[in-house]
Length: 103
Image 1 (spheres, rainbow, N blue to C red):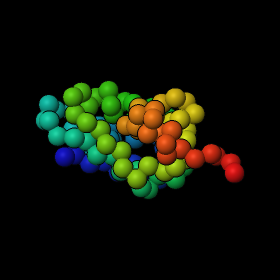
Image 2: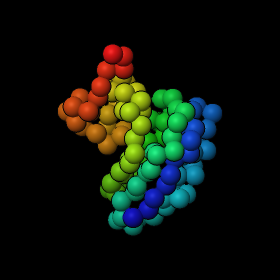
Image 3: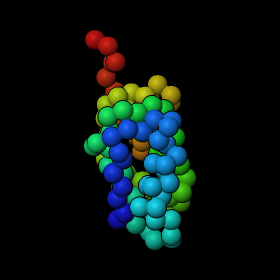
């Protein structure tokens, strides 16, 4: 299993470099192992973070990509863009876990 920890910040400025670093860390060979992406440190992000996840999924081929410790705000952003699949969530599981952004 290959693992990559997302940095504290993933915005349009950092997204390209983060994607390159992730692909280097996870490996692009044909090994069958899953890719684990840890988002525990992630604090500042925009929709570019979703684009990074899509890029990783594209390069993963048949390997699974598991995103761990997803910040709730990133889940909300994915739901808002209809991109739950970028985080590895189905629409129904995202709906079940999504909470309103405002009380």
